[in-house]
Length: 260
Image (tube, rainbow, N blue to C red; front, top):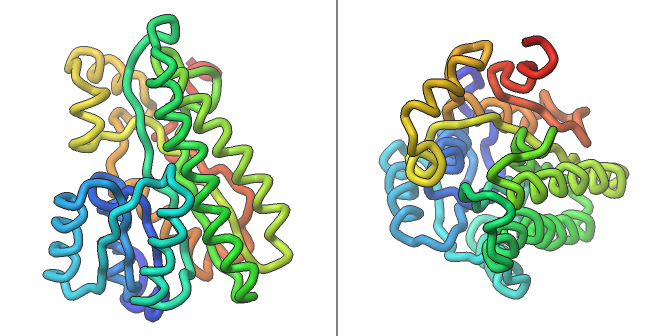
């Protein structure tokens, strides 16, 4: 851990999709650094595993069942978080959906589901938490977990690439609209990342994974441990003057087309 132990002491951090993968790693790191962490998602079992893990490490955490496509459910969830921990200081929009499939064969429902989770859900979360930050006058940090597939097209993941491009634009827009209130809004854009979930849904072909990794300048896919420190930086005082930024974390993968 490259940050000091009590960096987020007393801060309230809400992470969507906090039960697995990158979300779980971020939740553990924030809790280790003193934050009161609320994690929200649809699967209670995974959330419970993460809360138990954090508490076993001496941290403070709570779980909240939430479908981020439902505006009323979001408001109720945030009410619960604030009742338990206090006003939210940091919102991390990490929940997302994805699957592989050619655009021509993609069903309207498949397209709509990913757009609703990734883009509409992120907007609804930003809107609800942002309005509370604005009314409270306390400022705050909003960090959206986007992806590098927002750039240069997203073959076999048209829905995901389109939604992440929308998230990037939303990030920049809110940074301008809310900056005067002391609210920073940034996005972190991981490249290919290995998690249990992505291995099940995306990286199922070992030969394809080996081929893709061989083309990344740093020679491997990312891990949740690569992403979390960037989010911690943006949420900390060290990131106080950073807003509207789209920070790529991909081991140099984005440079393949220009350099190689």
